[in-house]
Length: 505
Image (cartoon, rainbow, N blue to C red; front, side, top):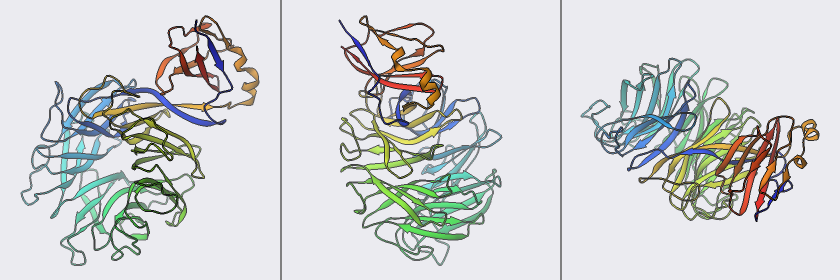
């Protein structure tokens, strides 16, 4: 006979500590190779995923090699629509935005001539692009940006004056003050793609722009990497260094600062914190600070003038690559990315590259760390919070074990809906009203609910996969079908969250 023990003393963490488990997930794609780079919420609550696809199925055609893949999901993560854009070459989307009229803007890079991009015989290599779609996904215009060699657009934002600013890299070969190496390229344009200004910033060596944001003061903060200390750059350490700068709305440089060590660093994301400071995360290979080895997440907080406040490295002895930051209301930071390590800050039993989620406290200590995936290649490109406060991770997976099952094809797109479990009691008055003593173990494998109000509950296995979910409009929950082992049970009564272990023998 199996016995259930409700272990109220075995909470998942300290009081108020968040734990993130999988509430729902989807692995869309074809028999080819798909990945999802970013999520966007539509007005109807559905999610749009922008990514890459080289596959073909009954409803999705392929224009050439890798196409821009736009996919839509309902609130249960069911795929409800998808479309490809591109030409005969490789096309890669970096960012998608939606304006107030419901139109979509997509930027990225392409080496296609023709298809959904204008043909320009003077350009033979990779170009940056900006594409505008109507609310139904039909192309209103597409524009490419290119000069001599490989150029690309990495990020874009809407500005408060109703325009768009793009950042990327290009060769400004027409400017006598610059070499033929790539510079950080910036362009401001209206919503009809009419250029307001263009700027090239950086050093005499190869530089690239990666991220930009609009600051609360109306100016823009930009980051990228630089390779020399001349031109607009005041300091260089070694190989690729992080370059952080502020520019005004006309593109004029206000201040700049460099960060680096004895090897290479490449920034991945940049945000402005609630305290007005700047926060960036980078992929770092330099041997400094609390460096772990291989390649680490490097988190840097600066003041509003780009001067360092605090920084820290996260990872193991192998390779880590951060992708995106998200600041929560209480000031904690979530970092989504990839890890190849099985030691250091990375706790996992998987043996390949996997998705990694970190929650960082305001003092840069780790509050939560979890590896997601299986024993093949998996990774996250982003983390997204919708208007209801629900959080999602997006990326790709190759696995059919661990957190995943029933996958097909090569790389699948991967979307995870996160469940945030808070260990501990949020309200002392409610704590006095209810206690875990109201939930009794039964020798017939049942838990008895006793409460004046309905109880929401979820049962998870130790991999964080949701097994049961419901609302207790009955008195008894039957768990006799579960195998022997340890499970996690989360219950919510009004504002109280009980998160405890269930041991079935």
